[in-house]
Length: 305
Image (tube, rainbow, N blue to C red):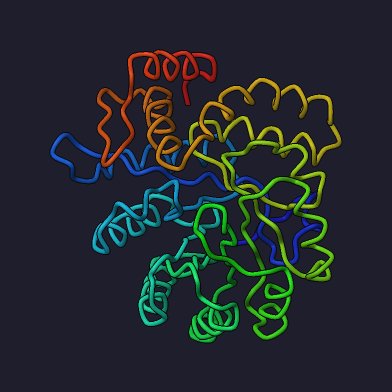
């Protein structure tokens, strides 16, 4: 559900601020650790996150079965219990699959959805517009798309985003994985009608907001710092926001090397901040002794959640 805030003027959809992307944790036998989901949700609420995001690349959606994805969404929604707006990324590779999963997310309590393009790198833009349009027509909650060709190999032009916005009234948000320089031309091309959320682990968060983004979808491991940064900016405390960013930037730079590196080490850092005893990975990069020491150092510097 949208919230009242001093930043609402910058949001057309009513959604804004820092939406940490929830991580998946695993048990020693490889199964999902749903207790760790509850810990993350409670930490988001406790530290003032503006919303909760799930099923993006940070949730390792590509490493989960459809049954596991549904289990994660249900567990998040149940624990969240409408305490924060819930955003679910829909990553199925067919129109029918996205519609089915979108409806399941809506039924679980999702307040808005982010549609990922299908994993077809040479798809013409008109086909991608048709794909998203068919899903949009079958859903009732506000929608965004993840426009991240750098990571996904496929995306829409700014003109394509404007066309999608013009044709479908529930299409209100775009999530990008780009630097701040990409935001002004995007806002100009879409006539300011789309709310821009940015991922990239939270790197360049200050300039992202100053460039016109109204939201950030970072990793879980450092979200509490980015929440404070957003709130400082909204209250006109730019120096405080700068100080917060400087304190967390080394961790963000360390994490943003590749998607698999990011989720592996975000889990290593987050587990320590959550005081989890054991850390298990699924199809992860090697956690080297040096990498483990760096994760421990970053977790100590960030402090417990």
